[in-house]
Length: 83
Image 1 (cartoon, rainbow, N blue to C red):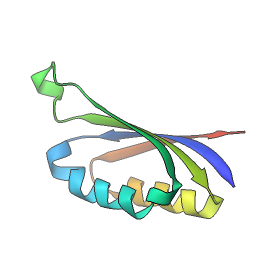
Image 2 (cartoon, rainbow, N blue to C red):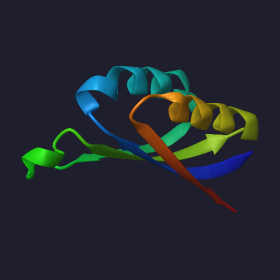
Image 3 (spheres, one colour):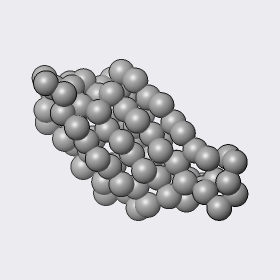
Image 4 (spheres, rainbow, N blue to C red):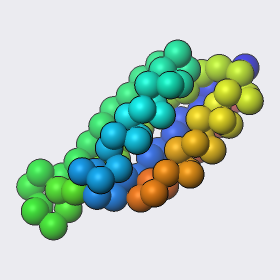
């Protein structure tokens, strides 16, 4: 069992949001904290978003979540394992 903080960068939220949300829902039992952010004050960045997750669970399930997120178009993931 491990605890991971994932930072997800989403470009063109209107295009990628549905697949991203489906993936997060699929692994919802691992997600203990979720914070979504986007910049409404700059029109040129309104389509970009960031999501921070605290994920706790079995190593292989967390890796599967990260792999599925990274496979999505317009989505980038960085993860930090907390010990």
